[in-house]
Length: 345
Ligand code: R1P
Image 1 (cartoon, rainbow, N blue to C red):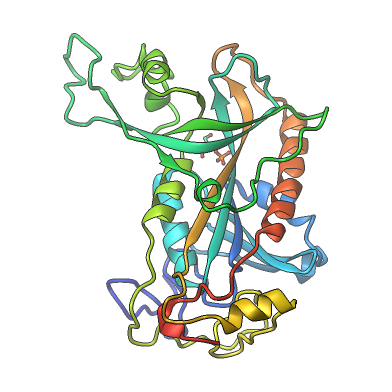
Image 2: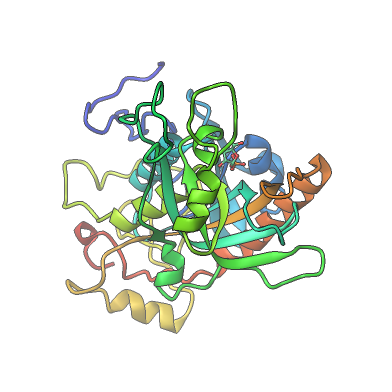
């Protein structure tokens, strides 16, 4: 650890850098693509307006990579988050601390597919997700049955679908099979809670059948989407606290459509309608929110046993990345949805 952190509850440096991602206000955009590996982040960043060397890049001590630039003039960030719910937790909470107003996050992740009709190399856009967690209270050493070895949660929905936001589901194209409005299951292990058989006493031989029986329209298995959707559904703006409004000076791009009044964030309404929405901000304006969605790339089909080739995986993540950038840039962000403490602009 190189920096000095000031607050044990939400550690930040004196200039506002968060503990694990290393970012501060102004270095991450309100529109974010969250991916697993850094190579996927770099592949998608090739579509940004800037030359590669002109993009903002920060790799934190904990290996989170953030790339910030513009897509067709709209500020976006691509964050490589690694794997699993704990990493998604760091990213959503710490990015949230570094932006003001609405936050839009779309996960582009690989998955295992439970739909036999979808070949590897397809895309799936779930509208809901359940969590599948190992039940540590289960007797894994000697239970004669598999009942209750895994906990399956109730579903949480993608907030992009619930709030009349444009869908991230791309138009069908001959080259890529796409299925939307399915249900995802996010597991706490790549192996046991996704029904993979290894040398451990996991009691998961029938887990996939149990999941399919329990969750209608279940289509993909991966490890992060549920937690993203869940956190998006439970975030609320905090009341004014301490130095929350202190925004350090930065030369990085900020989104003029999301414009708190303080520091260098300046209201730059780009259309009369937008200007109106800014002027209309009032005590009763809806609070800022997080909208979340996910696009899953089928790298493995768990029913047929097929696994994607490296070439197909690379072309698919680029294709999906460009489509999601287009969707993100097209999401309208209501400039009136500011933190209550920011008041009117
Ligand atoms: C496991 O191999 C990883 O791949 C999937 C899982 O959710 C897990 O993170 O997603 P990513 O390709 O986005 O990492």
